[in-house]
Image (cartoon, rainbow, N blue to C red; front, side):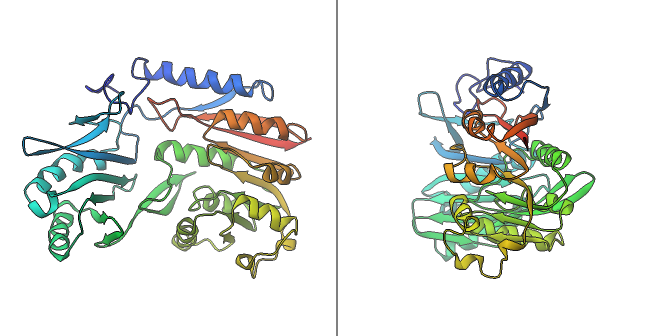
Amino acid sequence: MTCQYFGKCGSCKLYELSYEQQLEQKVQRVEGLLDPFYRGKFDVYPSPGEHFRARAEFRIFREEGRLYCAMHDFEKKLLPVTECPKVIEPIEGVIYPLLEAIEEEEILERKLYSVEFLSGLSGEVLVTLIYHKKLDSAWETAARKLQERFGIFIIGRSRKQKVILTREFITEKLEIKGREYLYRHYEASFTQPNAKVNEKMIEWAMAHVSKTGDLLESYCGAGNFTIPLSTLYDRVLATEISKRSIQAARENCELNGVDNIAFVRLSSEEMTSALRKEREFTRLKGVDLDGYGFQTVLVDPPRAGLDEGTRELIAGVEQIVYISCNPETLSRDLEYLAKTHRVETAAVFDQFPYSEHVESGVVLRRI
């Protein structure tokens, strides 16, 4: 990937390295951190070289009556940009014509502060226009014309106000092991940013999980891993703290004709407490925890990694699939899990080219 803003835009910090060098650096970092626990071969899944990011957020920069998307430079100052080759094609194709159209409508342009894009392999695009003003019916009329003109979905936001013109999600299409899966990705909710690498992550997990017993998943989000993995199990119990994500996960089950997953809105800590029978939760009403025979657990925690209670709980499960967005906390958690499990295989998934972030995964089997 080449970009005229390398060295200026703070979004791409590894611009001085070729993509191959970046990837090798990330693999070496993960290998070094996991060396005490695993010295086998890592599966490595590179990203597309460009047009890989399905989410983008830009500030609005004004100069001589023109609107520009802007990123922060290395000194945290706004840098107007006229290209961003890392965003996927559906976003790239609409960014700049959309801004030109907004310039033509004073009611759309006035006090526009930032713009956010969400898209995916399906090609649908959701645009959130964020303002420092109250949005009225005149704004809505103009925004509807804009939405129809570009074939996109628009949401307007301002302080304590959210205007949904048609809908607040895109429907994503992922191909996993030759089968198409549909997902509703809601505005402002967590979604995997690199759809092509995400497909590989899911396929990797499916290839390495044990297919015996039932599956427990913590931090399930909107069912990204859960729904494809459910085809391998009789029953799945999946937990997530976000109310919006649980709603989307249940909708995604319906979209994909899946009926063997119980999605429950609990934090990982609360799920641990429930399974230990330390307390009861009304959100588990109708769920027979004693009826599950968990042989495999999948965890995909935030950058902070696993809490102590969850580490203790999953240490009693036969197989652990741990997807991590922070190899440092993964290494920390493996210090505890290595007392009861050994790492059977590991992988590096480059979800974030041109940044220092890296996704990795390990499969552990109880000793």
